[in-house]
Length: 138
Image (cartoon, rainbow, N blue to C red):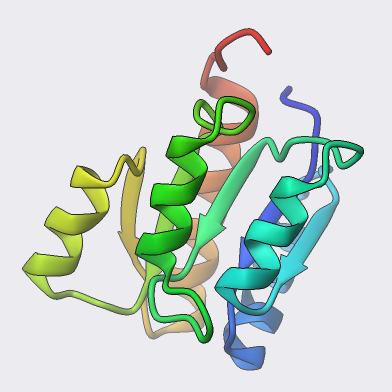
């Protein structure tokens, strides 16, 4: 199991609550750190005394600094460039999907509208990125 928190970068309080509930229901044992805008995510990741996240769940439509800008920043920093980043967004736009992968996301997931389906997606996401995936050495 990967240690380190899950960094949830999400400006919607409703989506934050749903994600936290889904992670809890899936019995994800990692702590969850929340950043409510892109600048807050960069500030968190910039602090060298913070543990690196096991995975970043990154919304694209964020205030202050966009999700794509956060992703580009993560990939530009030696300390964070290998941290797995999952774009978890409501955008189904092909240009956003392409931009996410071009910017270095490891996965792109469109948030399902229905809670049961959303919970299932979050459970699978947690299982894969925190239990199954082999992370690069730190």
